[in-house]
Amino acid sequence: MRRMRAVVAVLVVGVLGTACGDDGGGRDGGDVFGGGDGGGSGAEASSERGQEYVEALRESADDDENFTQEEVDCLATAMVEAVGVDNLDNVTSPDELADSDLSEVGLTLDEQQGDALWEEMGGCLDFRQLFLDQLEQDQGLPAEAVDCLDGAMSDDFLQRVFVTSLVEGEEALDQDEELNDELLEVFQECPEVLGG
Image 1 (cartoon, rainbow, N blue to C red):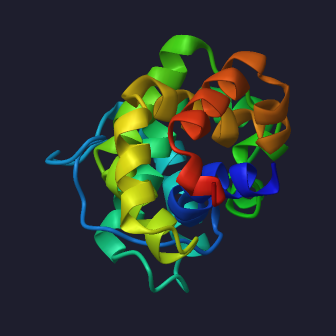
Image 2: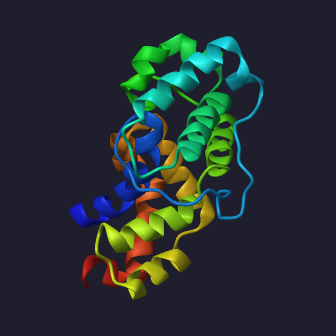
């Protein structure tokens, strides 16, 4: 079970770390599944208050050498654009957000906002490829196991893990029976991930 959680956590730690001030691994930019042209350039993030949140997130990632400055800027802008300045102001401040995860400040997103967050931040990084690369490099999974996971995990599953982890935290993943059932199916399809 610990190994299963470690595999899922790679997605959160690797991608969300930069946007929230933790360490993570980097990739070239792309859309959610590769080939995008960037996201998070709308009115929310470009407002004066929005820029305060963007700058706070940028500063929190200044010492992370695993992401390019362009990727950091894109992720920070995308997060603010997707969540919305009013929603952020209701639960946090730029300074607090720079040192916290969204799950720690009490933010809640509806399904539409969660989709927007996934799409906006997906314009900055290819989440699927980042996830697979880190499984192989950081978790030491053989290429065969990574290829199996790539085929077993749907785009919708990755999105729901991403959004749930970012907004509600790892505990929410533990409590989401539907996601856990799907996760179990993935690992049953790819037992080599767990050393089986």
